[in-house]
Amino acid sequence: MDRIAITGGARLEGEIAISGAKNSAIKLMTASLLTDEPLRLTNMPRLADTRFLGQLLRRLGVDVDERDGVAGPETVLHAPEVTSAFAPYDLVRQMRASFNVLGPLLARTGHAKVSLPGGCAIGARPVDLHLKALETLGAHIDLHEGYVYAQAPRGLKGAEIDFPISSVGATEHAMLAAVLAEGVTVLNNAAREPELEDLAQCLNAMGALVEGAGTATITITGVSKLHGATHAVMPDRIETGTYAVAAAMAGGEVRLTHTRGDFIQALLDRIEQAGAEVIHANDGVTIKRNGARLRAVDIETDPYPGLATDVQAQFMALMTMAQGESVIRETIFENRFMHVSELSRLGADITVQGGEARVRGVETLEGAQVMATDLRASVSLVIAGLAARGETVVNRVYHLDRGFERLEEKLGACGARVRRLSDSAD
Ligand code: UD1
Image 1: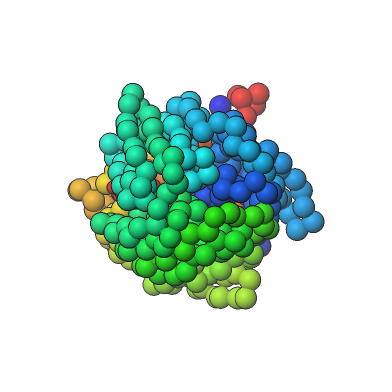
Image 2: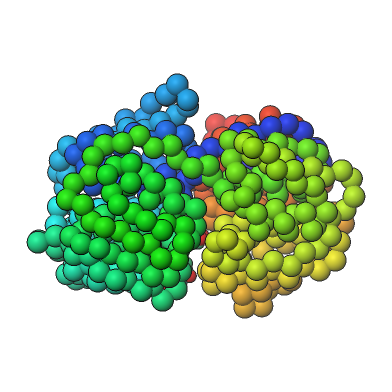
């Protein structure tokens, strides 16, 4: 199994081109199930998660063609016919967001059997809001032996859906199902993350009528048919935020291009408060830090436009070496401090109580063997490794490969000493 080794202490100087957003790409790919014409997605990231979903979509009858287009990687997805409406456990369990094929399958074929996303995720990250939304649209839903059996033989019907809490996945799922429903659907307390706007733009390019995406009220007027389209995947704001934090941690000057700083404004504000410089540009943002030690800053994760939970672990890594004590509150996911024990192995001083971590900055971290526990947690260990003394080896790198494209190459191009150790190099 691959590992990543980081030798700390190098300043970062250079430019990193940000990839297309993983979290958007995987929802956009499922939109291909809604039409019998080709959907061409440009600016596609090439990641383990997009590969998993490609496998599942092929099983459902989608032709998935990954190409190198003139402007970079693209994927053309074409489902002339949906040949199966069955998404088995072994494919869905690999990536939770695969569950989102349920709505499009139901909208296109009137029925679907989709595995619940597996393991502890069912308890800790339920899909009740997804199912409730589909039921409100008129689907009949049964749960048996880990599977969702959904039926809407006469099609879905537009309805008003009130989300009790903001959920990105459930809002996207409802949107994907409602575009082909009969009549008007209104989503109240919808998630406002930029990925919602990206999905709405793509669906509208396919002939859908979605208004208000990016606000708390989304109105969808159903149409009877969608057609093919070309859509460019939005830049990955979490990758942008991650490299912004990496630059602040290692010091130096890094220009992040092909992205938008405003998508991570809440994070950039905190990075500035901590003492790094943030310079906005038309095609991205530059992060600069010269010498001086960073200051401790408190953060709280919140739905967009608040600070994203997906950069909480990275920011915590930054705070491990800041001057003073930082309080980090996680309000989106209850168990998202798995990186704390690994950061502590590097010498970080962190205590956790409930949804709150207190990070007392230390002057030095020391490289050690650590283990990646999930996607964002694993990249926080890489960030810590950039500033730690000696070598940090991050094990179980497959978590990283799910969501960060060519990480060692991108950081390496800016002078970081990061290398991948594959099995054969053991
Ligand atoms: C998405 C992102 C993830 C990000 C998260 C929050 C993808 C593939 N993943 O996850 O990277 O961290 O948004 O920005 O886009 N909830 C329920 N019932 C449901 C659905 C969600 O209670 O049916 C809860 C969750 O447990 C969580 C909260 O709602 O506490 C927000 O989760 P949600 O926004 O749905 O996250 P995801 O869409 O799973």
